Amino acid sequence: MQSIKDKVAIVGMGCTKFGERWDASADDMIIEAAIEAYQDAGIEQKDIQAAWVGTMFSGDTGRTLSEPLKLNYIPVTRVENMCATGSDAMRNAAYAVAAGVYDVVLALGFDKLKDTGWAGLGDVPFPGTGRGIIGSQGMSGPSAFALLATAYFAKYGLSPAEGKRMIGMISVNSHRNGAKHPKAHLRREVTIEQVLNAPIIAWPLGLFDCCGVTDGAAAAILVRAEDAKNFRADPVRIKALQISVGQSQGFSRSDFDYTSVYETVHAGKRAFAEAGIENPRKELSMAQVHDCFSITQAVILEDLGISPRGRIKEDIDSGFFELTGGLPVQTDGGLKSFGHPIGATGLRMMYEVYKQIQGKCAERQLKNPKMGLTHNLGGFPASATVSCCIAGL
Image (tube, rainbow, N blue to C red):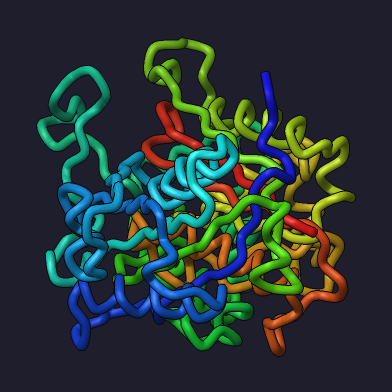
């Protein structure tokens, strides 16, 4: 099996402000992200030879991108892979460049959810059933991920108070970082007392443990690595792109204990192998992971082998994941601060890695970052689609 490592480079990226974008249509956000990416790469739209657009709820075909950008008569493909949609758009674009089919391509992800009124608490059917199996209502996102928290607390001997405080500190760190990012939706720090005393959504997940529904778009310009210096002096190379899709084993296996997501384990192992990383805890400069809920971040970091099993609390307590810690996580504030316009999130994460490596993150800037990971988890813990992308110098 061949690797994509160092065959493709990112030479331009764009990202809108995320939030309640009542002032902008989906087309407006697509144009905003694309223009920033073009300008960053020093190209014109006519230079784009093919494009991939990722959206879960806000578009239908490739025309979703070609119409607002006026991309006449070039290949445009719409991609959807749950919460890994933006990452998968970039993955498809990267493989087309690596194969030598195109020289310059665009990957763009977006969703505009606020106009829909969707609050993220709707009925979600269980895989294979076509309907919910808890009463007649199925399972909501918060209730599904709350199972991770209660199971984790029980397995590793955390009292409800200890566990709630542990995941609460994850939210505190994310909001501290997000308050420093001008494009984040929620730009206010919170205290642990605020997190612990917030209204409960699905115990133990309170209001500050859950990411919001929001609007946003992000884009990337990809070229072959050997051509990257023709576009800019500081390109960022793709080291790995891996996606793992489950077969709902968590719903069918009696030994599934809701303290691990199998797809994250497999995607992470393959991504680290492709990138040549033996010890992610020491070799990564940063990680942007899918903190749709605070407990999700904790389980992800253990599934990726960054923290030992059952010991994430030690790293949280020590400040290991803070901006000045050993491995900063959610340096831009994550989903907790940006919200989750599903098609945009994966590319928004890579936007942060890209800017950090180039030293352009102002007061959030890390010292000499070399390599960063992005991680998206779509679906339920028991049946997920997970992407892991690694990029660096």
